[in-house]
Length: 84
Image (tube, rainbow, N blue to C red; front, top):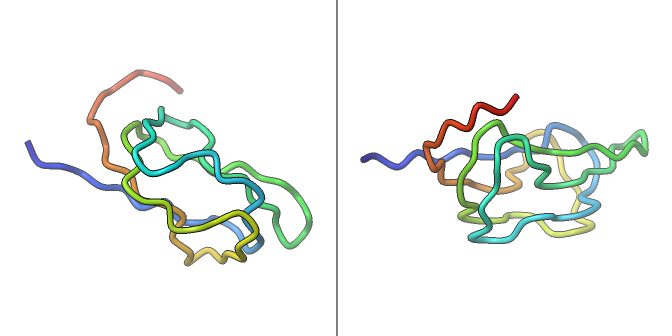
């Protein structure tokens, strides 16, 4: 079966407040992966709508990010969980 990888980008300009995953972590759909403090000083959660295994984490706590910044990559486990 073909492997599918997803790239997780920062949706905001700001800085990484907290990294909640590490390489090889298993994550579920819509689980919070990162906390970002926006330029407006609002803390927002970053998640992805698939489950799978984190294959790389590209940022560290305190790092400045933009909407073009790759936060991590994930190998989709191709499981449909039915969560909303």
